[in-house]
Length: 410
Image 1 (cartoon, rainbow, N blue to C red):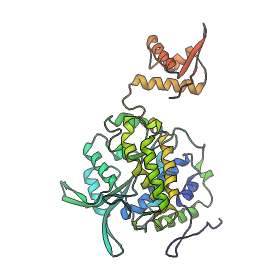
Image 2: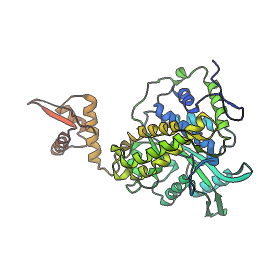
Image 3: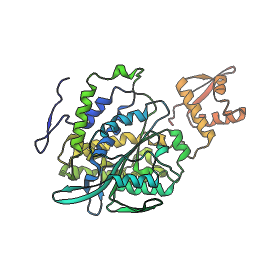
Image 4: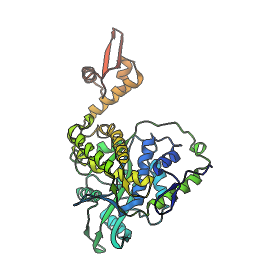
């Protein structure tokens, strides 16, 4: 394996890769998952390595690097949990990184925080943190959306405010958690979100703090992963872990270059003047209000991925903005089925079937969806609505009626 390009960083140390995230995405690219998912898994790994030891000071509050990242895809499409685990398994090999419980209950969470408590020093000043990363292959095992108290706690933990909280438990009495910090990555399906997220949560405090990474198709077909794994994979894995360990040693406040500040001010004005068209919905209002925080959390990770100077550049913010915009294209799909009737979901399934087939005889189309619309009138009403919406077209001669995709997009 050719030696990777060594990057000189402050203090005379070197890194194995000039950009850890780019190197990681290349390292994991043998799998079927979209590169976007690998990128966000790498973001979670870097955030987990940095913990609460770095921040961007805004006077009366601080932005920290933790993320709530949720992979969303239909079952069996992109191996969501495996994709997340590739990155998090690298993080698990970094000394000193703490991981939380698989299920977020009060006793388990308080115990995990107590075990993660540590003190670190920056220029003679001592700080305390209770920092941990949560990883779950099933979001529902980790978080119960119906538990308002727990959801409210996760909302507060994302903000990483100074201070802490106390909790009285049955067996250990009152536990005090100082400067808690959580970094989260989990996986789920659109159906689980539709069935478990109440309408009041969407657009509220919790989901607006999550970054949902959506996929509905494989990037490539990999029947036998062992045949695709590069021969030098173990070597590159060790180099990535070594760089991740160096990243975990960073401490202190980030600073912004003048170009970054100029970019950030222009971005902020444009953000409120021209919100994304696909997010002009009440359920995305909370996310838009916090997008500036998401922007800078990601920019800090991008900066740490390429060097140790704790400096956010204009390029970091620009790259962060483009990356978030890519996520936003699919955000409506994540929540599309929430609050919808079963009839509405079946109608969408029917339209997707017509789009995939291209042109379907009327009889075959009705046979496909008959179980959902056993009464002909109900089927015809659904079909008429889809036609009026421009989602399908319907026509032909008697005995040769066909249904085709329409021009409108859904």
